[in-house]
Length: 109
Image 1 (cartoon, rainbow, N blue to C red):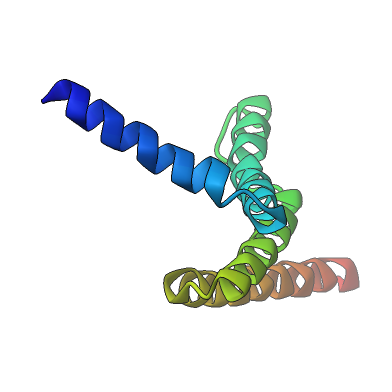
Image 2: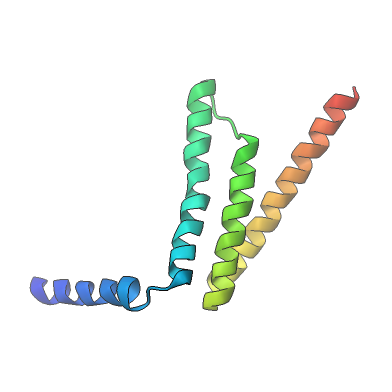
């Protein structure tokens, strides 16, 4: 039974990562790496500050990674990715708008 499961897993991963290997697979993996790197950035910034902080670059990585993943979703015709990243990217953009608005108010004082 374990050998059969192992054979199925090997065939699955071969199909996903070898048979279907193309530019968009690489693009999607890079998109996820960019998107995921924002958490490492946020963690390092928080460790440096000694408290939980959300650096501005977190939101830029969110937008870039989100848009890349959204493009991947459109190309691969993945509705779950399209819906999730479409909504999320809108939220990231709104957060940036709020941050810049607040910074403008602070400068005006």
